Image (cartoon, rainbow, N blue to C red; front, top):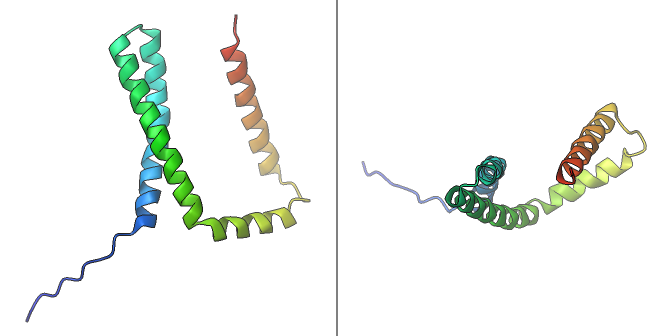
Length: 114
């Protein structure tokens, strides 16, 4: 009996999802390490983490564009359904919006501390 191997076609959609997820996880880590390197005045580490952060951010943005392209129909369907229910704002939405605005406000205040 012969072993027949079937070559699977490269799944670009899965590739984009995995790559964007890995970049999404890496970005906060490299951002924190970049911030810590800047505080320690270590030029090499600062340059290393800034470069890594910028490259992963660029890859993330490219993969997000492909992700939107592959999932456009599902996303627009979800938004249409969500707009119909928008009149009934949920407690979860308000809670998420309050936390988001609080973190954004604290970030802005931290950036402009005198």
